[in-house]
Image 1 (tube, one colour):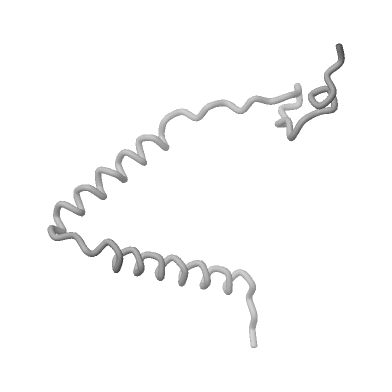
Image 2 (image 1 turned 180 degrees about the horizontal axis):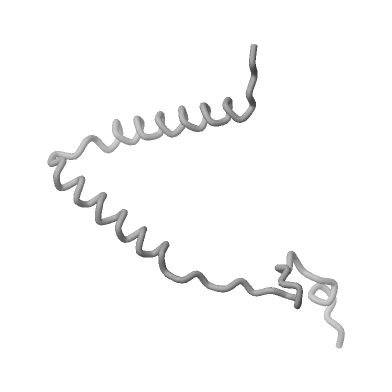
Length: 81
């Protein structure tokens, strides 16, 4: 038996997503007018695409080496007077 851990995870995620969509359709129901639903989905996707194409904010770095500061330092925990 050829066991692939990542294949197992991928199949589990796919199954969970499909079950989630199926449950959502059962709960919400299907749209009465498929054209209106398609237009709404397309407009939503276009807004998401435009937002993702906008310039990203720069990360604040704590040192000249460009490494991001993780957590708090001792001076943050016990400030000196």
